[in-house]
Length: 197
Image (cartoon, rainbow, N blue to C red; front, side, top):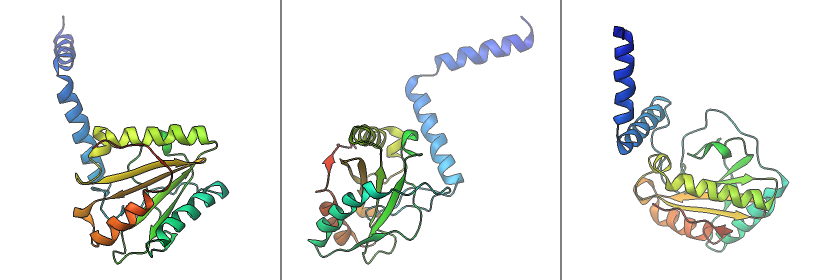
């Protein structure tokens, strides 16, 4: 073997011997560093305070209006108002959801960056149920967990051909009592898919 072949063989052998848990840790570290490098950092609290998205996505359309109405009704029972968010948001999500049309809405709270939730619009109820499961699985995984504070609670649910995503972190919220109350009301809407933390 030449010197280059020896080095290539040694390098390949070293990669094969790297334990699986160390590979997962390295992948997680790379994702965190990439997130910080892109200026995203960790997702903030409220029910969905997040940094602006780098790239806007298509807005959800008519099919999402029934879901928005159901969310408004649930929040109104607690005295909260829901409006379309004034910024574009892109929370941590699986790659399969990135092209899906979605709209961001915000519960009016004392925390101006809190109360954000996302409604994704799929083509069919079956696709929405699969999308909700993919989102819950992602948020339960290592890459999903590192993008949110450790005390984050999630509501991932399907309703018709839509998927709702909301989250709450007391440690990251500037108005935790109201944000928790609003999150609990949002969590009554749709068929929930559990997120394991």
